[in-house]
Length: 179
Image 1 (cartoon, rainbow, N blue to C red):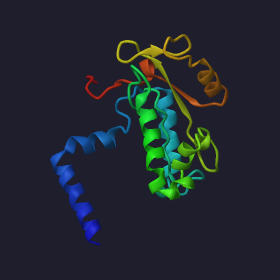
Image 2: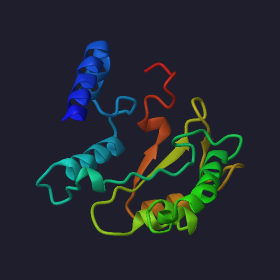
Image 3: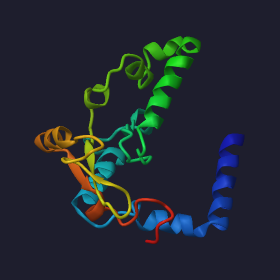
């Protein structure tokens, strides 16, 4: 009861101190995206899995989001160091957490199992980000000195994934950019 009251109090304070945040969230959950097909697909997916009564509804405790580290969350230049660090930390801390051997996503990291996120039952959203914006980030994909991504793009298209084009689909890539 006390925790609920504190949470409600924190939300009230946040809405009073930062009304723009609440307004922005209610207006558009993806404000840095252009109104293109990938944005509509993502929003439709989340509406299906969060709406009680929907065939694809998943309770909040069962929802899992998996992101790969190909520049989507962090820039990968000059190298892919954040993912390597995270995997190393999981392996280093695993002896203190034997339950991780059976608990995802730790189990997948410890077993180097990259396909875990694709299997299982329930609704799945699979998307691939194409790095096509050389002005705001880096442009690389099929013909890249960094890494060839043509096989991943071909497989994503063949399996019906949502393909996101950074240049066309995102208004903003980094928070400091003007919208």
